[in-house]
Amino acid sequence: MTQERFPIVAPETVGIDPERLAALIQRASREVDEGLLPSAQIAIARHGQLVAMHTFGQAQFQGKTAPATNDTLYCVFSATKAITSAAAWMLIEEGRLDIDQPVANLIPEFGARGKEAVRIEQLFTHTAGFPNAPFPPNVFLDREKRLEFFRRWKLEWEPGSRFVYHPSSSMYVVAELIERISGQTYADFVRQRIALPLGLKDLRCGLPGSEHARLADIEHVGNAPTASDYEAAGMPQPPETEVTEDALRSFNLPDVREAGIPGGGGTMTAAEIALFYQALLRDSESSEGPGLWQPGTLQMAREIRSGDLRDPLFGNLANRALGLMIAGDEKRTFRGFGHGNSPESFGHGGAGGQIAWADPATGISIGYCTNGHDRHPIRQARRSVAISSLAATCLQEGP
Image 1 (cartoon, rainbow, N blue to C red):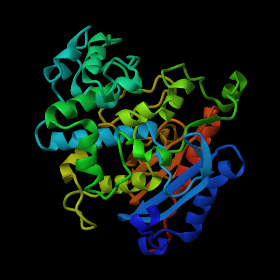
Image 2 (image 1 turned 45 degrees about the vertical axis):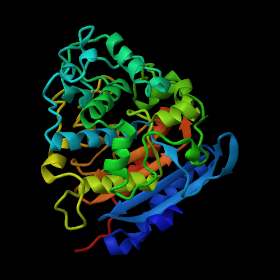
Image 3 (image 1 turned 90 degrees about the horizontal axis):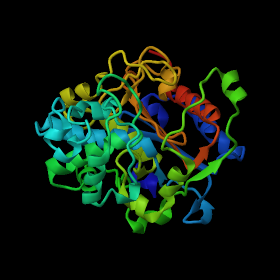
Image 4 (image 1 turned 180 degrees about the vertical axis):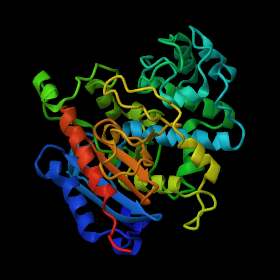
């Protein structure tokens, strides 16, 4: 069982307030209790220790309904981007990947149709200029087809001149870089260099068929907001992207699950998320147990590299580091953080309301997963902010 793999310590032993933690857990279960979401799972960690893990509701597993448990796996969608990026950080640290050079230096096939000037750093910051590049997820494991799509992709605007979120395209290229440099498949690299050394056996980018029965099927719930709902909330109506209901439900298909899409196909429990982020708070010299990355690497990875570029939808600063979002001082709730998060907090959420972040100021990290994808993004965003705000402020008070 998950709780046996990850011992759960008493919250007071790591400075977490039990009453505040209970309020957080209760809030995390609300939408399941009210019947909106089929299931959800939450885990909180501090000082390298898991202090809580709870799973609520029931889910479809390969079309069959069963209770969700702490052993239930979830697809975390774009929260995968932080894991893919962290794998690349290892190659940067080893001097094998120079992010200032053009991608085409290492992947000549990528340099076609105006993309020859795209730099590797821009793949991580969503400033590379090809956000709408099509790529069927079930062909990722076919390298020749993968490279053919790289050739076809057309540059949409000058690299570095704009921030526009790349839902999947740029991380396909990062995965190809990892494979060319390491000589391993992307999935094997993540497994052998990150997941297993950290003891996170259920963190995978590419789920074998033998584990599919544990993965909660994606379900869409609720009704989409109207134009007046957006107006009342003071939020712009988001444009259509490749992240459609059909695209998200395709992650219920065996071949897509096995592909391990580098920008959105990671599968794991909420505990794996929380403990992965604990590892990003520890470095190779940490007193709480050696981490996988050197201090300078983690500092480099968390540096904001998007400058004064702003999100075209909400107008807030993009605050993008190497595959991470940084909370910052302004509008941090628009980046998936809570009201109580410090400006240094970092993370990356995922479609459907997956939450994943760590706060260096408090040492807290959180993983929240659900297989219920709410068609109402305003309601979903409010849930994420509420949960993150409670998580960010659950420390004990006192000297």
